[in-house]
Image (cartoon, rainbow over all chains, first blue to last red; front, side):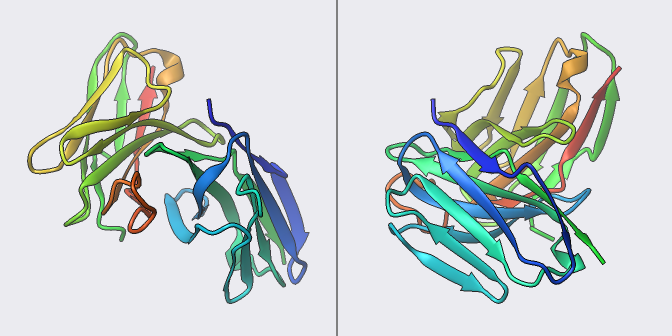
Length: 111
Length: 118
């Protein structure tokens, strides 16, 4: 079945450094979503990418969907302590309704 | 506040027991999802309903079942509970189903029900 992996599993950065998490699917995706889960909280929707090669920006966050629609990335520029949490991608395969969540990347930002 | 309500917030029960988790989706959302998150783990998709009908199934155990009622609220039933079933169970809702397209499929998550089996 469809599997979605994320790397790295954990990342510790100094405040002000950049951070990137990568999401890889075993199958081609129709679209991909990104969520953030703060410690002790619930996942919160960040963005959705649909088109091959699509790039979207939200302030310091840049999201990219691969040309083959099998991978995606989230890049945070100049991390802040408020960026702490686990970032999940969630991909929907072609012809399916369900979104499969990636394994997540837990980000810690050291002040 | 996401608009998705889950009850109860916490549940402690013994092995072998049966529990029911309840979810009220956001007003207007027709699609409801259930996810299981074990300690420090990712989100495992369990099942999805749309307007009362089951539309997608994940790695849901046979001991687990769910349904979505005419008023669109959903319940997840967990029976013959085992220690390994201890986890955070999230319900999420979205406007659309996500089959024909991608519009309005972003999911809004509830606060979760933390189930502890002892």
